[in-house]
Length: 446
Ligand SMILES: Cc1cc2nc3c(=O)[nH]c(=O)nc-3n(C[C@H](O)[C@H](O)[C@H](O)COP(=O)(O)OP(=O)(O)OC[C@H]3O[C@@H](n4cnc5c(N)ncnc54)[C@H](O)[C@@H]3O)c2cc1C
Image (cartoon, rainbow, N blue to C red; front, side, top):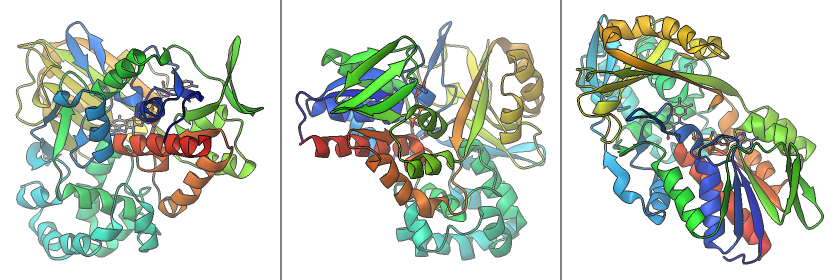
């Protein structure tokens, strides 16, 4: 596909926007990328602070992220990707039990789970996941709905089929840590797709920071003559004669086409080209704030694990603690340490608009249980929050995804939407949406 002469505005320099920009640029379009932040990356952003490189949100990339790794290669940054040891732990009954990241199989082997639950997992859940293998694909979550697995929450399904421990010790920590979601609000089909992926999960990280892909993509685009306008918040994208009009405070510019690659509520605010039905559907996408606190340490944290999740009731406000020197190289100065702490969903809501001191007061007590005395090693803190941090894939939402995508792609001939909320709440979901959005525009430009 080629589109020489087509000028395209891409709003949003997260993985969805930059995936779209790379594909459009490769097809010969003249691309201009806008982002409200002073840096690229969106939620994959890495924050450099005094020799530390802090990943405040995205931590790991599944080895199964085919499109993401394909683009990383195309952007010339494949060498940044390293297998992460994947050594994690679940805090339960006052101590850390080691497990392998997200893997039900390793949960079976670990001391984290009571024996009766392990037996039910082995006899019932793993065979269930095998039986439904073809229905459980994080890249096509609607298949779980077609198989009848999207009608109830994983809390309801889990309590009935496998018992309360399954919900409390498996579903709750995984969902809170990786997706900012409670078992009561997550679709059973969504959780099963995650668990299915976890059966063969190899996790990778990017040396020097999670933003490695977005930085490399931005470099490739600039070298090829594309324009990146950072610190530039788009206020409105609307169709105009033979193209689109992109506007913000004090400026307005005409392009041949546009990709609006923003979190769903922001896309709903900015995209004026949506049909009433598309606007209503987009408004119905459920999102939730996220918050994290980075603790810069004058020594390593001194544990073997990378990510520690808490069983329900074991922490008041913290979902997970991630020790960055145990993830990948290039993040922490020699002899130092870096811990990133993720808030539980209710704590992230409570911290909206709060100060860094509020965040330390709320989150540090839980961290001290798992890392006693760590407060004495803290030489700096950074607090991060995202109003639109997580998309919640609740019961019934998976079956609506094909309609959501059709509305996002077909509302206007020259303007399309992209974002992780259209496929899956992961970087792979975001990249998939960006590539699909670019392909839509290119097909119409032929
Ligand atoms: C705490 C946390 C941890 C996560 N961990 C992982 C993980 O380990 N692995 C994983 O695969 N996924 C993870 N995710 C999910 C992942 O971050 C998202 O799926 C992915 O970043 C979505 O990409 P996107 O491009 O759709 O949106 P974003 O990354 O949010 O990018 C959107 C961009 O739009 C910009 N923007 C917003 N409004 C405007 C405007 N009006 N004008 C111009 N620009 C604007 C923003 O500044 C941002 O750069 C995590 C998410 C969170 C919140």
